[in-house]
Length: 100
Image (spheres, helix red, strand yellow):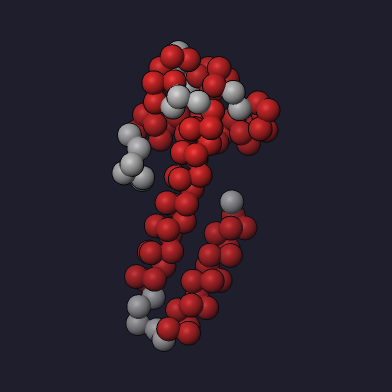
């Protein structure tokens, strides 16, 4: 979980991602997001002033998850050589990207 965002903000970001996947870029509007999150538009705008702010938050959450994943990979594989660790991280990182 990204500590920079409240649980409500993370919930809005989750709904935004679902909407983006289902409706594409043009379908991700603040009004559609409010409806998806079962919130009033003004409440969504309290947390995110604009669509661009929502998109920035989505990117931030995504990259924080990537960082967390890589950090856990490096911790899990500390007893192997640096070369083997790098190979492992790259392989697992590529698998992570494919899953997304």
